[in-house]
Length: 218
Image (cartoon, rainbow, N blue to C red):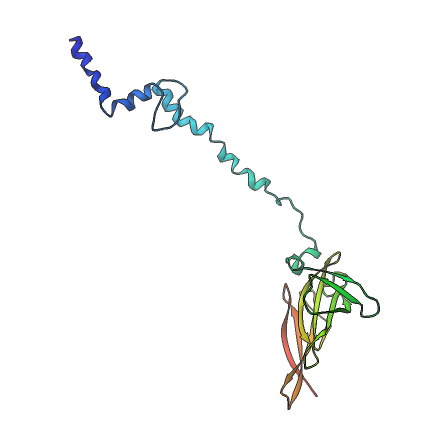
């Protein structure tokens, strides 16, 4: 009878018994987790508590947004908003004298010598923005390359119109979104019947855009 009972020892030869006995020794191959003790109960507990020991990532995942860089950064000042928030800014310094002094524009926009035609506060912040003329880059109709740059900070400026060919730029007293409207003039018509167009521009959040056009009387 004792041999008959011990005959069940062939059970390890089956595929089911090893997983049962493995759990008893605490070496469950399915979980990949080593239980704290060798009992089945502890093996089960090890499977449920193992995520608990590594469960900290769940709370930790909420930490980065709270401490992410820039989360506590102060709001940008007026000089750093609008056109100045773009990457396209220029370093403009005065290198000449007189009513239309020469300017150094970096990086070089590629239109030759730059002159300061006027200083004007375009956005009402009390800063001196620049009306710049590139006199050596002229068209056959008498137009020259001109541009408007808004002051950002220090010697940094952002273009809000141009550089483009035009006969003239003239800031107006009327305003759109707090920015002064601007007129630019250009030639039109035909060779036999030339005309001059007066184009009113309004600021549209980032740059000046044409709003209305009228033909000037000869």
